[in-house]
Image (cartoon, rainbow, N blue to C red):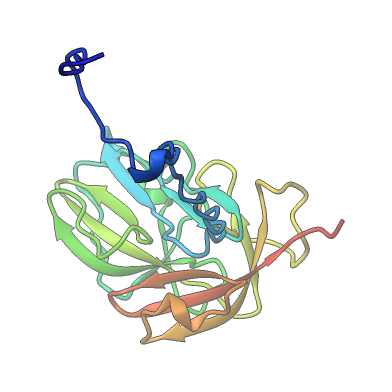
Amino acid sequence: MTGDTKYPPGDHWNAPPGGYAPPGPQFAPPPPPPAPAPAPKKSAVGKRIGAALGAVVLVIAAKVGLNLLLHRHVDRPASSNGFDYPIGTCLNLAKAGIMVKPSDVQVEPCSSPTALSKVAKKYKGSKNCPNDNYGTLEGGGSGLCLEDNLTVGSCYHQALISHMFASIACKPGALSSDPTFRVAARHDGVDDPGSCESDQQAVNFPEPPLTYCMDVLERSG
C-alpha cells in the first residue's frame, strides 16, 4: 500500500527502534510503613474553678501520661465577692464538689497534708494562667491560679466529684481509670517536665516554677 498512513486523531507515541514494544509502566517499590507513634508521655493537667450564683464549681481538663487519660474537672460558680487570697497561700479544697460555698475553702499552713492547692497568681477578667496545669478559683470578676501542693513520697488520686488530687494509700488503684500517683520528686524553682524519668508522669508549673515527677502505681497482670 502506498501513500501516507492515516492515524486516528489523539495522542501518539513513537515506537522504539528495533521493533521492540515499549516497556510497560514502571513502578517504584512502596515506601516502608511509618514507624509507630510513641505513646503519649507527659502533657498538662488543666484545672479550672469557675464562679456564679454564690457557689463554686470545679472544672478541670485532662492529662495524658503512661497511656492514661485522666479527666480533672474543677468548674464552679462562686460568690459575687470572689476569692482573694494572697499569693503563696495554701488552701484545703477537700470539700470541693459539684457545688461549694466560698466558706468551704479553708486556708491552712502549706505544710499541712490537706492543703493540696497553693495560690500562684492572680488575674482580672477571663482566666489567665501560665498553662493548663493550674487550677483556678474565680469570682467577682477576678480569679486565682492554683498550683498543686504535694508531698514527696505521698500518694494521691483524683477525687471522684471534684477530680482534684486527694490523699490515698500508696497501693495500685482498683480501676485503671482511677490510678494512684506517688510523688517521686518535687523540683521547686524548676519548670521542666524533661527532668522526670520517661516512665513518670510530669506536672509542671511555670510561675512560680515547680515540677512534680510522679510514679503511677498499676496492678500487675
